[in-house]
Image 1 (cartoon, rainbow, N blue to C red):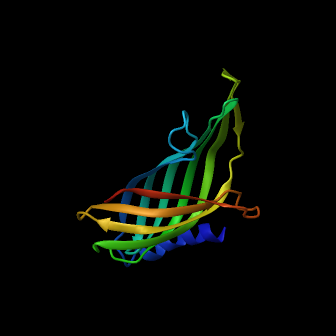
Image 2: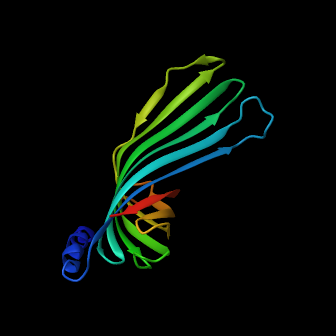
Image 3: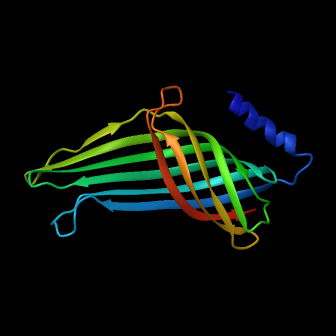
Length: 196
């Protein structure tokens, strides 16, 4: 509750002294890792992809509130002479973060850190098996929506007055914000941003 009060108060505190501006961003990540050696007929692998759209309101020169929406998919494929399994994890993630930059809007390099909360609007796991060449009925598990803490850091490289390249790492917990933290998920993202 205190975090949301802070987020609502900070913009009004900065209106009188600073010229606010906006940032719209698109980013994504893709990664595929093979788990077995080259030469096998079917190779086991992990494949991850995600895409994010974001909107940030800079109410001070180096401070912003950022809202984001992400869609992601993680797939693990394990072949076998008897049972072949494919596990696919899908999620939709809505985030709200307070962003602090270590540079002015006109600087060429702008490091940043951010922290906030993320809401898993949709989270599911699909299980598919092929048993001795015969596909079994797929199983789908819906996971309850949760609110989790999130954080991140990265760097912006300004290409033009309004366009910049952005790369960073983002972290969030696998459990709900009101539960014990068991593990962290993370994603490396690269994309572009427009300043309005």
